[in-house]
Structures are given as structure tokens and as C-alpha cells.
Length: 236
Picture: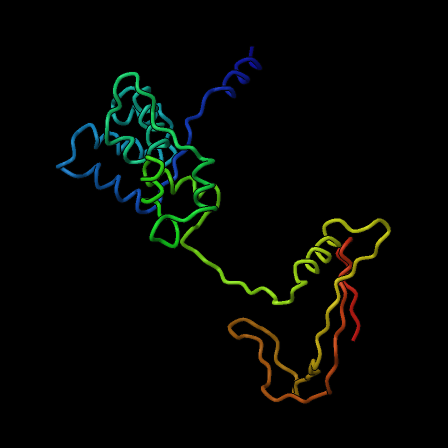
């Protein structure tokens, strides 16, 4: 009997969590506290804020004096449609607005909106008919940041792609019994030494080191990385 009870409790449904950005939390807090907001909308905003704090539907229902089913409904509505989901009441029997995640990702990564360099949450929301917060949530889930652009430079060698494929192929799928080494060198390395020994670290004082040094010539380091096992082979 004890085992059965523990097993049953482990199968209890846990409400989906809600993560809010600072902007989203500010909007909901404003709705929950504003005297111009309707009582229903203020209560829905409170439900989302408490859910974002990690409270379960039962705890939120007890705190606000409402039904647990009602709490779950507005939690799910916010997860699906963001702020728009709790601002309006759906007609009876009407399904909640759902976003086509695959289309959202494809549009973000493979296209650009008209007269713009990248998609914004509002433009994408208007394109898909969902809330901007819904777009932002899925962008965060897929690690997409359309507003960030990083530069790169490609070699002008006409055979660059061919050479690149050959080299990458050695890393990704080396031939049988092949020894793949990645080699490089660092030349003109100065061998320096301090003229006086420094004082060690102790309480209340950092380790010290003199500014004066003496040269012991230069050397060149040649190193190779064994791609298969990660061993580094070096020689000066």
C-alpha cells in the first residue's frame, strides 16, 4: 500500500512553468496594480505573475480565492498567446491560438521582412497572428537572436571550398589507419627572466614581481594536435 501511494504521487500532473522577461513582468505588474484595469484582467495578470514565481495551480487558486481549473486555463492561455491570450476572452468552443513553430523558425532563419534587415518580435507576431511574447519565447527556446550579426571573412582562393572540404573531412571522417595531425608554429618567442626574485603572496599583500627582466634569446614553438585522441605534441 505504501509503494502504491508513492507511485501514484509521482504521476501527479505538474503545471507547466512560466519564465518572464523583465519587460513582460513589468507589463503584467502594471496590469495587476492599475485601477483602470478590469478586475478580470488584473486577476489574470496576478495568476501569471504567481505562476512565474513557481507556484502550482492549487496554491495560486487558494491565494486568490478562485478555482484551480480557472488558474490552469489562464496559465495555458498565456503560454500559448502571451499577453493577448489573457486580454481577450475566446468565444465558447473556440480553440486557443497556436503558433506554427516550424514556420516561425524557417521565417526567422531563411527570410527577411520587407524594408527591414531582420525580423522583430512585432513583425513576426503580425506575420503569424500571435503575440510578440509568443515569438520571443520560441526564439529563446531555439537560441535565435535575429538582431545580432557577426562578421566573417572568406578566402578569395578559387579552390577554397574544395580545400576546406578536404580538411574538414579529415576531422569528421578520417580514412582508415590515417594519422591526422593539426600543426602550427609560434615563432620569435622571447625567453625572459626577472632580475630579482619576487615576494610570495601573503595575507593583505599580493604576490610581487620586479619590472626589470633579462633576455635569454628567442625560440620557436612547433606543436601538433593528434586529432583522434587530443594529444598535443610540442617541441621548441
